[in-house]
Length: 207
Image (cartoon, rainbow, N blue to C red):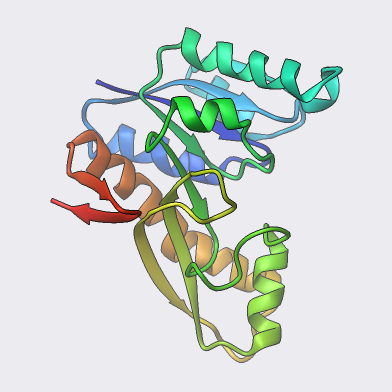
């Protein structure tokens, strides 16, 4: 059994994409053990509760120091004995302690074709605004392992999505989610659950 912790900050549509595939039986041997949110207002918490999945809110502002926040998050993850951490619209930078402890066991979905429109400051609609400002004809999404940098970890999967001439950041965001993110995130989880992902020299090989 591959035990997941899914970390969220907002609506939780990528969490839902994973839950839908578990429901369909396409992710055998995968279970979401806990959903951890950086915000108590995140609708993703309601999605988790609908599946009787334990939820935890760990907000950085509730702790006096970054170290206290890091320890609270770390202890929850270790307590649930998770095998893989999935960042599904999680807007905080993970503490270094967690990144090191779970090396090549944390994945993130980013709404662009890395290395385009990624790194510090590129999140949410800002990614799609940048893509439209640059005039690209293709964008998409990337699932990658998380390392000490921002969007710099080994790339697992990518999927391209066309940009239309009348797109707004909102319509492009919706298409990227529906045609890329919701597809490749569960697919990456499946590959990892089947032990088909190898990392060497920052390059992923799918077996």
